[in-house]
Image (cartoon, rainbow, N blue to C red):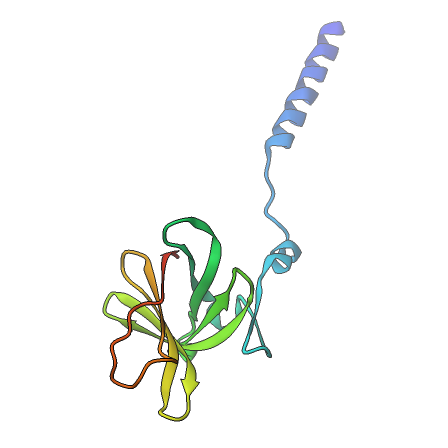
Length: 155
């Protein structure tokens, strides 16, 4: 009888141990709560899953690293081809951009200057992850502009 009780207690202990090791998938409500919302152009609110999701690159200071200073992205949906965004200071707010792939590089342009139909700002991410920010707003048409800032970017 004592032997049967010890067997029963051992069996219960083994079941409790096994049950405590089982993992359960997160509920759909926790997934929804973790989705990010970005705000573009001060008024356009977009969920991370809208338009088939997004691709993003987070960029930090090239030398010192640190926190994310700029995040660039584009939408996965073919309907949104050519549209991207730039988010500032590691936040969820930024501007809509024109996005395109130039060979191995990714490029975002924004800040349309209506006087000559050109963009004031560009960000290029090279194939090695180097991010280059260009400010054309103070340059004359036809002049060569060097990158104002250099970043290390990771997708």
